[in-house]
Length: 115
Image 1: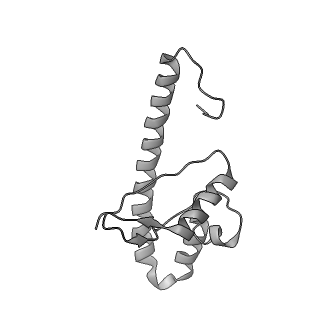
Image 2: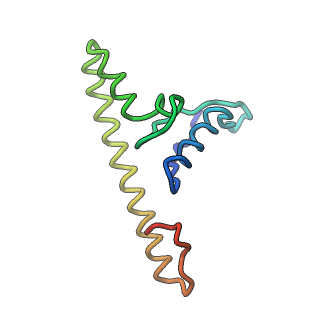
Image 3: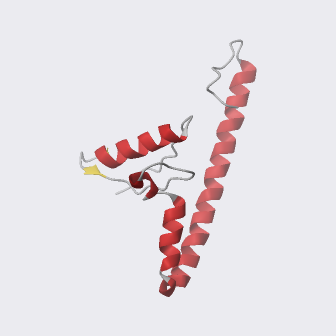
C-alpha cells in the first residue's frame, strides 16, 4: 500500500525532535485505519538517543560499518542523493511561492516565516 512521503520543517531543532518523538510514539494511521510507524531520517543535529537513532549521520555510520554490503551501500547512497535533490527542488519551489505571496500581500508575513 502507498504511504505518503512527508518533509517536516520546524523553527528549531527542539521542535523537529518533538515532532519525531511524537511520530515515533503515536505513528500514523493508513487509509485502512491501521497504525504504522513510518521510516524516518532526521537531517541535522538532534538531542536524545531516540532522535539520534533516526539521524542521517547514524544511518550512514550504520551502513558503512557493514563493509560486506559496499555495493548495496553505494547504490543506496545514489538513491538518497537523488531523493535529496528532489527535496532541495521542493524546498526551492516552496521558497519561491512564499516570496511571491509575500510580495503580493499588503500585509507582512509573520517574522517566524523565514524567507
